[in-house]
Figure 1 (cartoon, rainbow, N blue to C red):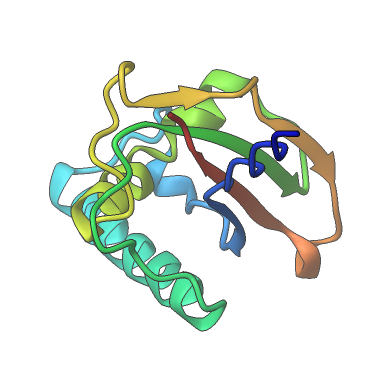
Figure 2: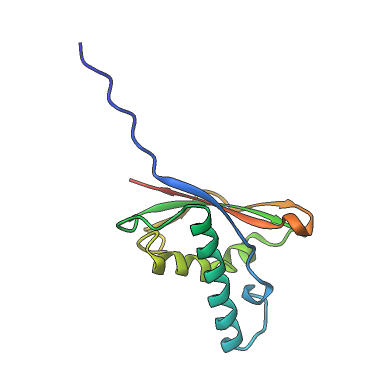
Amino acid sequence: MTAAPAPATVLGWTATVPLPPRELSPNARRHWGTKRRVAIAYVTRCLVALREQGIFPPRAPWPRVEIRLAFYVLRVADHDNRVASLKALLDGLVRAGYFAGDDPARLVFAAWPTQTLAPKERCRLELTVTALP
């Protein structure tokens, strides 16, 4: 009699981070220097939030990941604008060593992000990242 194979370990995490500021929207008409400062501050806030939730970069960046996004917002926006406003965050996660890259071969969106209306004090982004084989 053979033993059943051990279930595969799923590597991943779900975290709550702040919503991206309006200045990071692709529709925002800001000076590049202003946008850069806002992006750096936003990524820093998100990385601190991850660490406060006990989520640290793996020893080696995950080579391929799947991402699910759940926005809790005051008003619904176009999905493509929501995703585009996360460029700084995704680049920051790559630089911090959470995953190897954000190109299409390494980063897969599970679906378009969900958007749920929420009061201002409960607005947030829930980010689920799962390592892929």
